[in-house]
Length: 260
Image: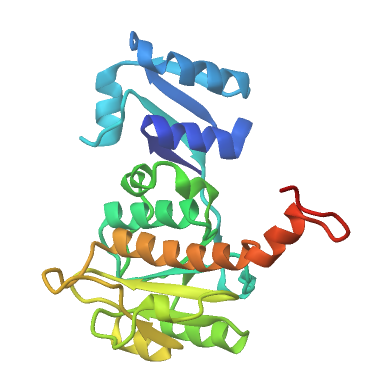
């Protein structure tokens, strides 16, 4: 069964990810801006159908479609036993994110900042809808999506496999930057109003806060996810950068004298 995707970037990413597996692309007749997308779809062997703008309005139920839509394959949802902790790819865990915009934007942040996997619970989370796909700007097409019955149980099981988990908590005594975020790690983000739930927070290896001024108590969930994943990426990049001594050795190999 196909799912419908709206918007220029989400449709483009669906084509890029699934190619000819995209059932068809719909474009509003007489709209010059969609010409490039129409050619891109046709080059992949995808059937392109010209429809009226009113037809897209009805399909989108009032949502923004930017004059394009596509019928793409259903996203594959992985189970927990298919997840193996990976040292160079942090896991993003979303706890109680019910707003599709926040949910999709969090997935976008995850993909942009090197987290290929996103995990959330079956209940108390936003559904995967066209609004979510659009909010992710198509990044959802490139994510490994893990849907589990219980976040707490999942975090405990992943911990048994060696994955450390960090719950973002504005009341935590220490900041995220004080932790070593290299290796296998999961960043757990809760809803803006309630934060990470108590049971999930207690199951995590650490609790840490993002550095903020006293004037702001919390961040939008997708922004918090982006800031946290950036810190993970920063620490890993810092480890990968050569030391000054290594750079000096490259500039002046043994046996060669520096030029004055």
